[in-house]
Image (cartoon, rainbow, N blue to C red; front, side):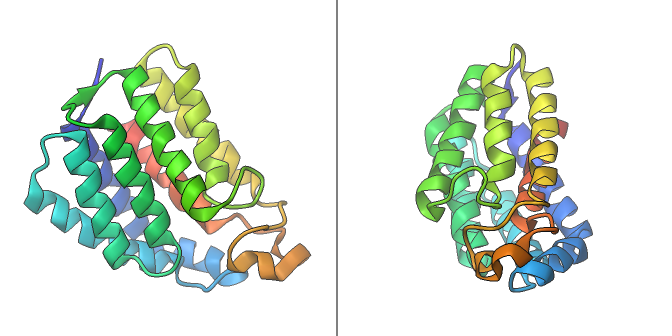
Length: 203
């Protein structure tokens, strides 16, 4: 079993739809500990990136990653654009000219995307960011034995990581200005990142 570029396009379409449906939920989360614009920024940005993606008809992982990454960087406001953009650029670059990847290749590309987010955002696990969902997902993919079950486990791991951000005190981003008051709310970035992993699992 392999994950094709066609699967990636389907997954990004599902991600865009999920973000659109949960726009207000993400905005509500962000209103409590951030700027209150995560939902609207992500909805606008993913829609714009999807339009570019459907026009580009990418054939390789690198083409997919570049189209989506640049689309997000140019259209998502705040910190989310560069972070998600970097994820997809690094993910695509790691996949290279491949038209499909097996579990090992996909896990490696996903990990490269996550490391790109680390490099760009200077955050780590436990800082109450999108990485608290992405790190566990990457670990689940690395530990998987077949692609289908590994993706499902990655989704479950991301959901658990997202939920674990609720009691955390933020150490990065606007939420960190609140100190102890940032505890008690799920991190909006971890919530949107979990939607991404979920979309990949469903593709």
